[in-house]
Image (cartoon, rainbow, N blue to C red; front, side, top):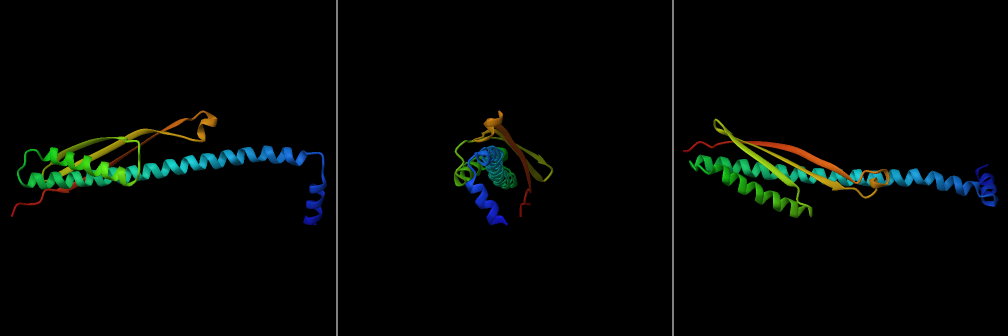
Length: 151
């Protein structure tokens, strides 16, 4: 039965099947393009979140170590370590655009608490077909570390 139908379609000369096939392929191609954009956007957000998480954790660890040693500049140590780890992480993930990382540290009793927020505009490849050329990507990560007691 299927072979009979296939032979009949192959022998058709009126072109309706070609028009139908062309029209049906447009939404399919668009859906694949949008799925590709979404996948790349999700992977980028995940990589940036990992980079920010590693950076803020390194920062609170450096800050708590400096605070343990009665260093009044513990926040500078935390910021410097955060910046270094964030840059190294972005290089490791081969992220060319450098999203700005907003970093905040505070001391609460015997604990150093850090918060990092990143945000940037990602350029899309397929979504401009429907008028969406950029999408904002942002996230926030938090970390804390107890200041070790001096022995």
